Length: 345
View 1 (tube, rainbow, N blue to C red):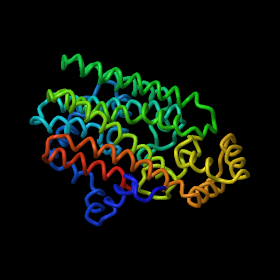
View 2 (cartoon, rainbow, N blue to C red):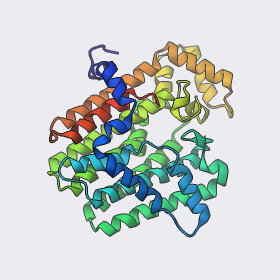
View 3 (cartoon, rainbow, N blue to C red):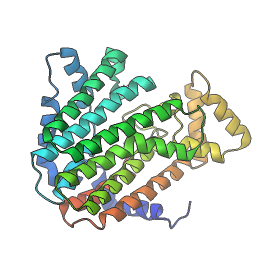
């Protein structure tokens, strides 16, 4: 990795004690929209209550499990760049969180996940059917809320986004086990993760009637942020830490070809590559095999490579902020980008 690349520069900035102290507390980054985030939290929980107790239980289980709310925060920050935050941005932020949560419920069924956010996945407690139907409800709830805003552009943005997210799920599902194509990986995480980050930021700008060029800049910022967020998340999966909110090695156990593993396969010796490709096709991967792969990832610096790629996206995100109006919201967007790169969970 080139030491003076934009990624390395961003990582060096993040490495200072002041930045580290700031970035381990996302709530500090978002303190200028703190009251709005508190109100959003109340809306998120209150508005999913129905007469169906199982639906309430499943929804509360995942929505109260400690998500960072970064996607809805992007709606509010983007909107506050141009005007005070009113009810519409709060509602759209709520929509974004419901859409995100719906995909988590569906993803866990597709992946056969055992945990989510450091607790049992909903499917492990109530079954796949309840998880899928609860996800469907949140998806429907989100679009019903969007229609009440009577904003065709927002509907177009979010309907396009959910279409792309579904495309990403299918692409991941049909991807050949052991595929080591980095471009395919990047396409999948764009579709599954980054496009919603981008649409959240764009939606906030659209609500505030921002100039089109700034709305597009915020979309690009969000997409770059989302790409970095997912790459860092995938790198953290190979780091043993109780802070990450998921079991160490989950991606390998689920045979997900994430960037650290792809880099490893591209750079290891021929016999090691054969071992890895054979392992990925096994029905079950044991703890000793996971330990061996983790050691290989460390030896070939695959986590460092992944964080370098994430740093490139963060550098792009920070470039987009340069044209935004100066003030607390822009400061938060810049700090949020640096937090994503330096986070430990």
